[in-house]
Image 1 (cartoon, rainbow, N blue to C red):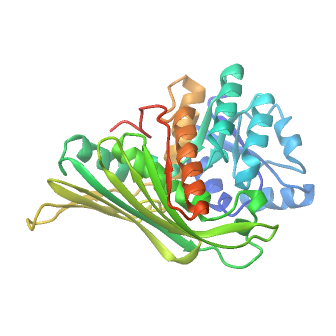
Image 2 (cartoon, rainbow, N blue to C red):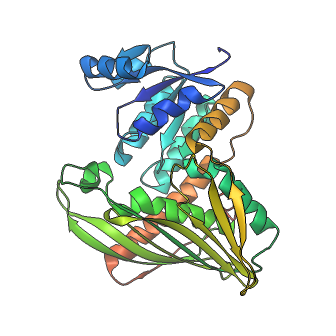
Length: 344
């Protein structure tokens, strides 16, 4: 293998506009190919972004010996198929969140990755930003005392009816698009798996039949008695915040999931005392995630987040979806792994 990880990209989704500049900016990676459903579109996109090769099909890219790993930004419901195809083709995989549409699918991916000896990472890029390293440092130091409440909001307006988020067959809707962040960060900061969930949703007709969620509000209860309240939507004003409250104080982070290359601030509050403002140097979390993944492939270092974590996140999303669709509100989760979404 070359000194740099050679990336291929499956598709030209909007998120690629953030990752295409980020992957070449890593110290240990380069983008050498991109695939689209037509060769003309692939070559046009490749020429525009300085990518050496454009492939007229995903299969052609996976068959290329010039590519070591693929980044998959396809619609949620297509992740399982193309992750498995990539692994069968001998490619490592970085896939957009959510990794798959169910815990069972995540576990199938994990089995195939183990069989092939290849790396797979779920692309929650925010986890690699220095502001979350600082946040976990403060939580580990118990600056807020016993964690009591977490409040997280993440919403935006997806726009017109042609958006893939309005297709149930593509894995659209708010919960699996933006709500997955809320669940993931909740599991991260508590370092536990929830035991119970409550959820209520708002729905509209999907473009391909059935009902699809436009917004979801939910609660998660953890073994430590910490409770998370989250709300998320894809037809709302843009909102993005995280607040963590404990018996000794409160932490607040604005725009926790945003791409912030400018400096940011993590606020620490303690019962009317002067607020402590922790300044965080801006960095591109897509770049940091890409470098971490490439280092794991090239040097054999462990991935910070494994596929058990992805399966646990999917399990919570499934329970929330079921609870919201019942309109009764509650769904009990059978405990699985006791590990949270990242050690504090």
